[in-house]
Image (cartoon, rainbow, N blue to C red; front, top):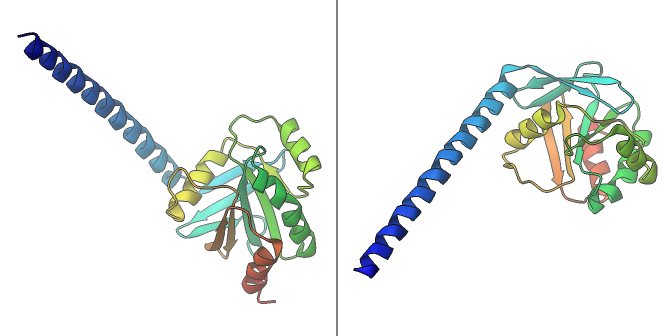
Length: 192
């Protein structure tokens, strides 16, 4: 009799826990669907860098166009200040941004919600990230949209470097990459 009572209690608790997880999972899916619909509903993503300059990206089905510089190769560096490979990659991106200043624009896009601009400026100084770093409420929308377009899911590795030309994502690197590999893809995109 005791075994039957314990077994029944165990089944009841197990069922309650399962239903609870299922319910919250449905709410989470509803929230994710709402976010996806919100991203799809807008055609522009407005990003603001640490110096309060705005960058407007027009979304296309396959990528983005930088509104003020539609002909430039856009390089999105999705990173975090605490990430060692992101830190190591920053000076290489700066070097390439300087070398190809007439043809490319590098935008650092932090994954860190609510980080202070001062911390990003310290990152820029310490790791020689001499390119704009956007710190905007729109970062998350852009990052989710990029991950969706690349079929990466939510837990992708960083740094994530995305090359965009003429409104189309043409290449991406996930994780630390040698400067020479990035430059090779830049040259291919620019046909140099």
